[in-house]
Image (cartoon, rainbow, N blue to C red; front, side, top):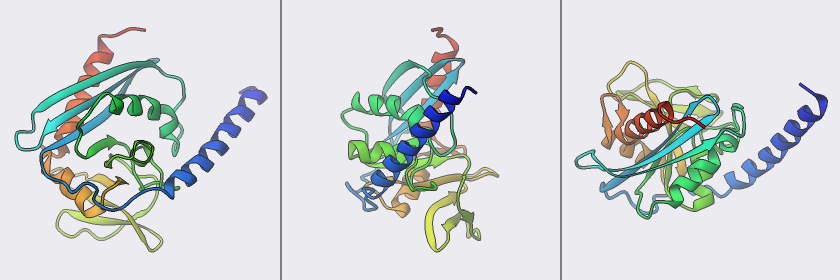
Length: 219
């Protein structure tokens, strides 16, 4: 890698760390608004070569049917760097959310405060837009999973609980964490209430839709 490009990336990441630390101090871990079990939104971004396709799907909790879906296509601008997913997916996630008026809690394929600086993609979107978000990840990069009790196991970082491993009927759990404007216990309940076949249905629909569009779209 050329030295000037390396220095540019290092500067960008230093700025990102400062931004994440500042935003992390603004995360609200209270239920605002209370979960009314009406709608939940799922957001996922799928990649095909240099194409990124983002999808946000609003789902009725009672029926688990999609009632609104919005998508956006973008050319990939930033490589994936662990701990800095918001640089890659943050802009498209924010733009998707701005297209929706009513979302309920927003499930985002990524982490919330289950993050080295407590500012994963879900928390980033939640704080910037002041909305209720939940991180739902397939893997974790920080913390230690505690003993499993029934279908739950807390994830600790030192003495702090920063997430929950949740088994939804499959061998492997999903990793749930607060994004913004919600408690961890409510975050887990929301994920459970909209789960089908081991995974939250709003995220499954968003992923499937984004993947199909990416497969049929060329830049």
